[in-house]
Image (cartoon, rainbow, N blue to C red; front, top):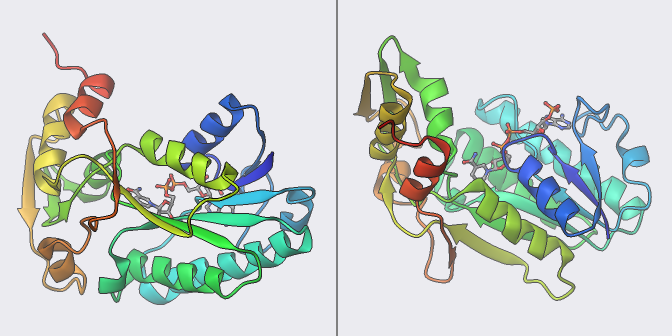
Length: 252
Ligand SMILES: NC(=O)c1ccc[n+]([C@@H]2O[C@H](COP(=O)([O-])OP(=O)(O)OC[C@H]3O[C@@H](n4cnc5c(N)ncnc54)[C@H](OP(=O)(O)O)[C@@H]3O)[C@@H](O)[C@H]2O)c1
């Protein structure tokens, strides 16, 4: 199959590209670095020539609610239009579990993206994923000040990006795939505790502190379990500890 992956160099996109290529599919990787901008639409029609299906694994450059909502909504419109023009069979979107409970930031943008995709002519399948194991790396990058990372109180069921990519690849190829599915890791985790394990393996930062930022409109649903999977979700390993051992082996 000829499949375009939007966000092909990202954490999840590069894994999807790898899985699909290993299965023998022809993959068109779409990134700004490759000369295609799905927000402005530059190069998109040309890139989708002959494509049978699209995976959207793009990420936004901002978390400001109005800007991120505009970004994801515009991308959905542009990809829908270009995919319809080549009579693509389907678009598969990677989204996030529980976003209906959120009104601000990245989560609100993802909800707008889902809705905009569903308003378009090409059939859409949505895989809502839990935060990736790799999200703990992002937490350390984003929240470390001095020798401490300040991680928002969050209940989550972290899942490996590779595992999500394998299921996304199945969803885009399968002629009889379902329209909506959730995927999460095998067990519920506290985000700060998981991030602290990663920091300990890396050797820095020295401390990880859990915080409740009452100025963040998302702090309550995040802390209360809105990001946890429902009863019908696919639960799949590796566990966070297995992932950690593989990528950050404990020093003897
Ligand atoms: N990280 C998580 O824990 C998690 C969990 C569940 C769902 N998700 C969802 O997964 C998606 C991808 O996240 P990620 O962490 O894998 O992203 P990422 O690592 O930040 O990668 C983003 C990708 O999008 C491309 N991109 C950005 N703007 C673009 C544009 N205007 N035109 C074309 N390509 C563009 C980037 O390439 P260039 O910079 O070269 O353009 C890059 O390939 C997000 O929508 C996120 O909500 C993430």
